[in-house]
Image (cartoon, rainbow, N blue to C red):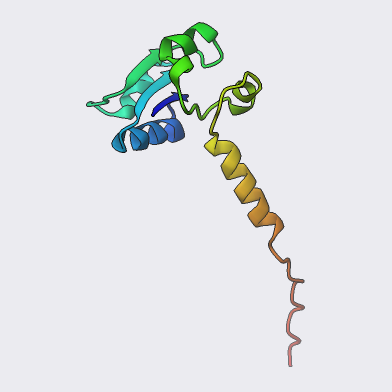
Length: 113
């Protein structure tokens, strides 16, 4: 399986490292070359410096052969690419958790005797 991770911040680098640990071929894309440091000294995957919305950068990263690309999911989905977006998933789960909470009325202060 091959994944392209666009954005190598805390979430992106964690996803990339986790996928490589289980045997995925991962290429990370980030505009900042220093972001490669978040992947560790012995990063076995690829790294492309560039913007994740640039088609040439995506091609350099191997988008045609990728099975998953977690960032920019909505745009890529409209292009017919299968995507996974942990940020969107987290927003949905957290929103549902908050909406399902029961709000209890505040208690009146106890009367002094």
